[in-house]
Amino acid sequence: MARITAGVGSSHVPLLGVAHDLGKDRDAYFGPIFAGYDWTRKWEKAEKPDVVLLVYNDHASAFDMKIIPTFAIGCAERFKPADEGWGPRKVPDVIGHPDLAWHIAQSLILDEFDMTIINEMDVDHGLTVPLSMMFGAVEQWPCKVIPLAVNVVTYPPPSGNRCWALGEAIARAVASFPEDLNVQIWGTGGMSHQLQGPRAGLINREWDNMFLDGLVGDTDRLRHIPHIEYLRETGSEGIEMVMWLIMRGALGKTTRALHRHYHVPCSNTAIGHIVLEPAD
Amino acid sequence: MNQPRDIHQYLAEFEDIPGTRVFTAKRARQGYHLNQFAMSLMKPENRERWKADEKAYLEEWPLTDDQKTAVLARDYNRLLDLGGNIYFLSKVFSTDGLSFVQAVSTMTGVSVEEYQAMMNAGGRSPEGLRSKKEGR
Image (cartoon, rainbow over all chains, first blue to last red; front, side):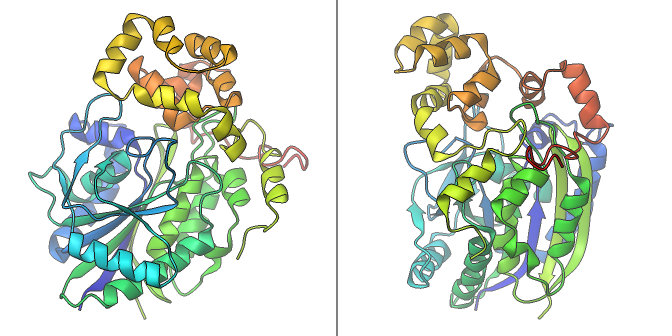
């Protein structure tokens, strides 16, 4: 049977992709950020996941204002890096797992999560930056990836509670897939940042660390945080953190933290990263 | 269920956050063509035509005069007021060769150097910027 063995949370700031691609990842500015991922890269090599279910948001790349799916799952064989306005990142194509993706999509719909199914899509920095952070510079990504895109741009995005419940439903769906697969789930985006208006540049170190604390153990208090609290406390783009709750929800009642990293700043953003395993 | 079920209350709270325009349905509708115009700059051939003659390129899109003026002036705060969303507008400043930090700093009333220094010192504190009403 397939099983979810771990959860990873990480920011997906586009500048990290630039730093990585230009070989600046160990300079004075980026070195402390990337150093926090060294542990994870080593751990991933040992863990060898077969599939990563990667929760992220599209930044006006694959989806424009024509169609705004709240939850969309990528069921294609392959996803190309998107041209976000400066040419596509020179990173490997992302190879999907259509059998598992379709199984999850069908199971979720029966479980009353009405997913949008995507058969063709390019993937932007929201998805490829976390892959670079966790796997480094590689010829091919070492596992299959199922993209799960969440609307966190046009309000209202899904509630934290709904995201957590989706994670729980994903765990049930994965557990009913007959093939023996090591599956990880990653939640990406955040942490505190605001990219617009006179309040831009907002960072809330205390709140971000409260959020990281809340991912660990048997508490489910994070699922009850309303949108307005993310907006007030973590900036307008901090709302991306609801996506981490899909990851957390999929890990069961109790988690254990294996690794944790926090750094300010990267561009306009607070970098947060955590590795969790189910502890039930 | 942990959100207010009353959509009016839910939306009203957004107006209480200082210096922030939440991308509500109202703004998304107002800025639909503005954001779709910005999106068109993801294609290299469109970027070339845009760079060659910005005004002529804008004429192809049903934007309001206010929106066109603000685009040409790269007045990002004004564009947010007119329904622009920063992820879409990023296609405009990326085409200009600006980074997020450079473009975002233009909305804050300080120079890019001052903005960068603020970020390097830990960013803008939320203290006093959470709520207009409550002044916290």
